[in-house]
Length: 74
Image (cartoon, rainbow, N blue to C red):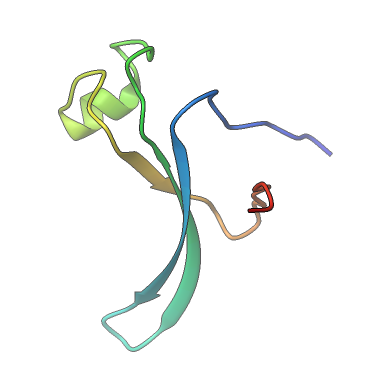
């Protein structure tokens, strides 16, 4: 198995999201938002794709269905 830790020290938020498709399909997905991007490389692909600059909050993305997320117990 190959494991990859996708994290940063500050400012992550994880969301459980319910999505409804135009065809009536429903799925539950996990998304993570990186709330502090001030220390990211300004050439990071997220900035180019979204047309934003480092320090802009809320760079979010979904995880594929076969990924797992570890979160602390509240």
